[in-house]
Image (cartoon, rainbow, N blue to C red; front, side):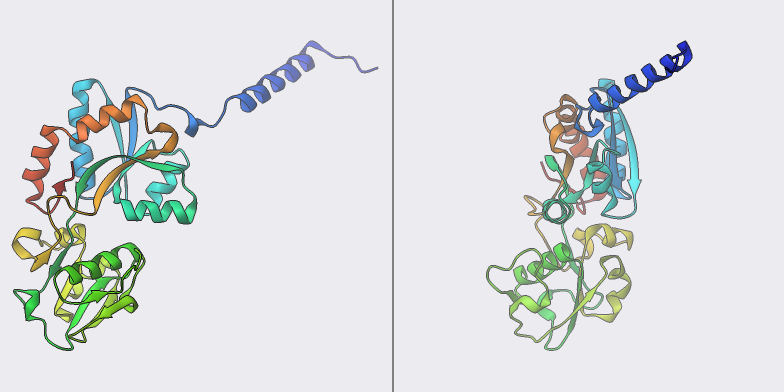
Length: 274
């Protein structure tokens, strides 16, 4: 019969203990968030600036915010769902819902933060009413933003979408195009550089700002700045929606100090959505 030494027995017991911890420890992403620190994912630009301001305001409540900045729209949700982030703030509700449906993410909206009103810009026109038969107009080519851009042109009286079209509608879903406009679908970030090539273009505010364009001074038509239909939202894993720190952050992001910062910093191109 094999003799067990003290060393071998200790090794076995250690292995059993580690196995027990692994089996009983649970998934970190299902745990409640800490009450005094949080890691938030954002995209570069206004959302990063707003997060930096939130970080300053949070210090008054002895709350530490770590900011992680991303240069694409997909990774922040993947990182949050996988537990590499505690929250993110960079997306609209339609974008979030599409990602949840397509990828099965268990994410929830905690609260609204800001809105980026989309605008129609032109280098030669002062009004959308100046568009003529056969003119070219540009819209973003990604699903949620193309619908949003077409809806903006519809609201401006330029064209009409088919009834009941969903968020993934494209230029093929037009019911009326009285001017027979040629609709050019482009990658959203490239539209400002192509503005000279078309008569008018719907441009996402973050890309418009990057090109030195502002809603109030440069657009010839834009979405409402008050009660904008596409607010950006602060998102957490569904299991953390009611955590104490999330409620603290809501007070910070929707505070009078934050509202004042947004209104002063962005001159109407980014507006409070609370």
